[in-house]
Image 1 (cartoon, rainbow, N blue to C red):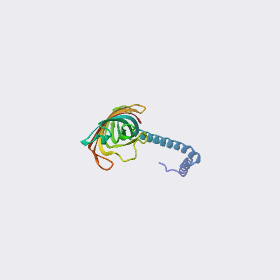
Image 2: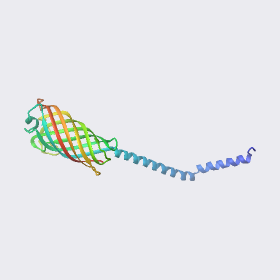
Image 3: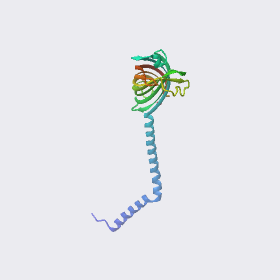
Image 4: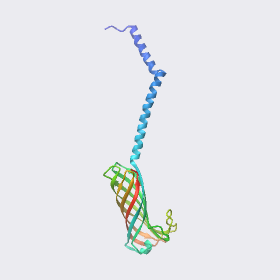
Amino acid sequence: MHAPTHSTRWSSLVLLVLAAGCYHAPWARENIRPRQLGRAQVAHAGVTRADTQTHARHAWGGLGLGYGSASFSCNSCDYRRATGTNSTRLDGWSFTLGLGWKSNRHVRLGIEYRGWLNGLKAGDSLPGLDIGTVFLSYSPRIRTGLFVEGGSAITHYTLTLGTGDPIEPDSRTPAFAAGYGWGYALGIGWQGRSGFTPRVTLFRGKERTLHGAGGATVATGWRQTVLFAEIGYRTP
């Protein structure tokens, strides 16, 4: 094998220099960089879109209006002082507001506030419930169809003076009777493709003691069972 001559070496060096010059030339950079930039922009847009779809798929919110039929009982109490009436069964309207996270396509984890009032009463005793629930919801179908849910709750029962105003239904005067407790809720419903969500929920709660404005005991072992029927909306 013959050793390469000087002319051969110089020819190879010239070819290498020309190739490097073509790669670093302005016209070459102008042709390469837009294509690279375009590919980067497309990749970035794809990642952003996928990230947005992931958040949209996982976060959810909802609200609803409904009716609730409640029954009350106690270990020791005067129903007139505890509910403003001698009846142990009262009806009223309810409002719910919830939000949460979808752990997968079938399961939702959420927190929900539900308020219940025995109508709107101006200048009269007004029983009410505030219920905060942490719940789990399961649907065998994806996004739409039948679902069941259940969870535990913190409850606050009050008997206040009504104002008749739907925005601020009770006065700012001290409650005639009030107490905190706990409970649980079980529900079943249906979610349509548009987010329309009717459901029925059974709630059972218990406050150990109801106290009056001066701290006197109004009731012990106070319990309530409420059946809610609701029409609402949940993000699909």
